Structure formats: C-alpha cells, structure tokens
Length: 360
Image (cartoon, rainbow, N blue to C red; front, side, top):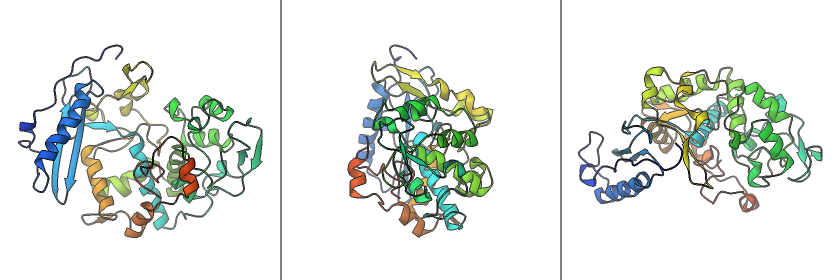
C-alpha cells in the first residue's frame, strides 16, 4: 500500500468482549481486559496495523481478543486461528530445539561446532569493526554451541555497530543481514557465504543479534540428520498440537494468513512486504531459517508453546525439555561488560537464547 492508509474498522466495543466463544475469563480482571482491548485497538485505529490477535492465559483462565482485519485491503476479520509470520519469535523455538539435542547428547554446550559446521572452523576476526576484510587476527578459540545460543559467536547484525563498515557491505552483498530479508539460497550456501567472511568479534566476546540463530537452524538439521522443519514438527509441534506452525502451508490455509507489511521509517508509509507475500508460503522453502524469515504460526499454537515453557518443559502428558534445561535457558549468561556494550536493545532479555524471550 502506498500513500495514505485506508480507513479501517473500529475495534470491537468493550461490551462485547466477554460474549465471545473464546472467553474463559474466570480469574482475570474484566476491567483490565477492557483496558488492554482499548489500548490495542488504538494501534489499529491509528493505521499502524490492520488488525491483531491477543491472548491472555493464567491458571486455566483464558481470554482472546481479535481486532481489525487481515490486511488494509480486505474486510476479512482477524480470528483466533489467523496465521502470522512469526519473525524473531522463531528464535525461541530454535533454542528449544537445540536444547533437545543437548539433552540427547547429540550436541554439547561447550563443544566446538566445527564437527557439524566445518565452514566456520579456523575463523579469522576483524582487528576492529571498521577494518578492511583482510585486516584480521586468528580467533583465539573455536565457536561453541553456547556461543551460538547466547549470540556471542562473532556473527550478527554489525550494522548496529558500524553501518558503513566493510563487513556490513560484504554481508549485504551476500544477502546475509536482516535488511536483505530473506536469504535466497540453501542452508549449505548460507554457511558457505558466512564462512567466507571474518568474525566481527572473538567467539564469546560480544553479543550480536540474529545471525547465531540462523546458524543454529543449520546446526539442528545437520546434527539431527533431517530438515529443520521435520525436526521441529516431530519433536515440538506434533507433541504440542501446533497444527498451523511451519515454514510452508497448504493452499487451503492461505486465506487465513495475515498480510505482512513494512514501514518506511523516514516517510512513515506502510507497504506490503513483497518478499513475504502470502502466495510464497505454498512454495518450497529453500532456506528454513532458525531466526525467522518464512516461519508462520498462530496465537493458538504459540499459547501451547508458551504453556510448555511456563510448565518447565512439560505440556499435558508430553515432556519437551527437562526443568534443568528451562532453568538454564532462563538464566542470564552475559557479563556486565557485555551488557554495557550490547547494541540497540534495552535490558529486556533481548540478549537471550531465542532472541527476545530467553536468557541463556
């Protein structure tokens, strides 16, 4: 969409909030749910969003609020089972998948990842973030799994540190950063492209966003001997009943997908993100990203996933992870100096395993 945002429907009136089939609100404050509804509705009324789905669950009580439409150009209403691109929420799922392999001793936290990721062995490290690509020193040690889970591998979004440095230019040319969404090749091609570039910092030295989760997705596939999507489906989605989560969708589900938009932060103009158009979800996904990209899910599915985490790795009769693994994932592993030097993000847990939810 170019130019002015079309007028969109008003959010539901507060009086109708609790007549929905979705409302199981015993134990939840109705006045605060109304306040939440009004606050969320303002984002839709202002034209920032065409619509949204919100879920609140506490001790068996549950409330779902659906506001607006699937897109600015459609009258189709948001529903509880609307499918969204999950972006960096995917990182949390990738972290859980990694810890499953740790519990099975197929991966170890402090072992180098060279065995499965030889493209990242014998790394060179930039002398400074603004150095030429050839101005490097040898890495002091290999990259470990713990480095990847804590986003301290030496790879990441260097544009937050120096947007015009040679490394950022080289990464952009290779279609590796977030700004070039999405990577057009295969997992092997992604590792090869990354392996041709030096690290921005020594392994374990500095927190950098995003790329470590991409690497973890490739590592999970190689260590498990199956595509990332197959591993996630067998070990997480099917046990949790996450029926609408994955990197692709059958055509029969495409009508439930919300349009993905981008905002020009200079002009404020909102346009559909062409690289994330709905039709692509019915096509084969060449690069199943552990950091986001094409991964989709619903509020229902993510509620099941969240409940598993809150219940220390268990969900009904299923156990996805041990309590100890969940405790490790929710423990802060960054040093005070690493937090001080962390780029762009406030102290909200964003330095975590899985991006913005866990601290590992």
